[in-house]
Length: 407
Image 1 (cartoon, rainbow, N blue to C red):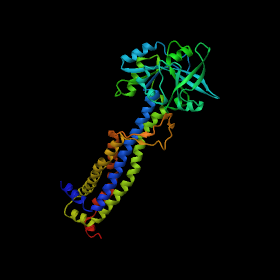
Image 2: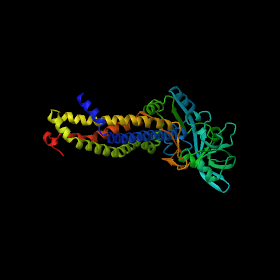
Image 3: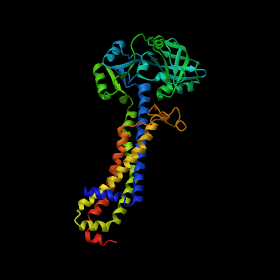
Image 4: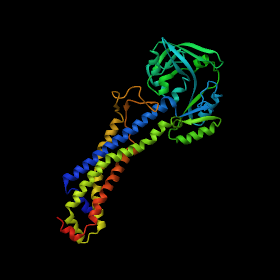
């Protein structure tokens, strides 16, 4: 109790220096709470774009399809597979794929034909809500297609324009058909943007002569809290004759980027708090040197070196604690405000910008998590604690007589 009493008394001893130190720590911590929340929001947006727009949480293929996409490598008995998935608590949507050539006017480009189940696709992705111009696919419009944004630019297509498609059907014949552009997608992913050519699955089956089977089943958890790896294992056991991959396995570069985000946050905290640590060290050294004669008298009266060390540490910890509360009072409301009012970087980020093949959202939201609030505060205590060690040890090792006569 005596140590705490002395520490509290000394807290406001040099008010200007103390509050400058506290203010600097509070400012740095508040900025890092905001930065960490913004980083969490950016990662959440990237995952949403990757998983919610194209990949889905899991994908199921016939064995060998991913290594060598082939029109004939299909999942048979898809309705039975979909029913099995439904009973195990998953939502799923089948897709059909083929390669072809699209031409409009004097321009042509290779495309990836995708047959979409219009009833099930919206249950696993939000691709239908990501139309930039025009409208999403409709069952009653079998000649209407939706194309990727870059593909539309390459072919010079607009909503309502006609485009010719040529491909090789499953029976070896030439499939060619005239379509009308019903909609153009916003930037989703590099592959979809550059070559995506989406049509109703019924149109795909008729054109490519694929009456049965699907090439891919996209799956989503009905219970998001379930661990991704555990759910992947459960799916693999349910469908042992098929290839099951989660989105992290399908996009290892993006998954690695997410894994490194915590490391990048720690590095940013260390860089920012290095300046705070130097300021704290300087302030405490000044405080110790000013009070050397006082410390000498205290030690002469029986104050132990350990007690003197603890007093200096407690005094500094009071400063850090006040700074942490001030940082929370500023950083937390700021982050919560930007969680509903995004920062718009559309003036700096192109609408077609991608990272690891995933569209980069120009509007960044903050997402306040326990990690984004607690980690900056913990690092503030850690860095301040390291900065305290030298001044506190110097005070503890003073010789009473030499300290009393110190000038």
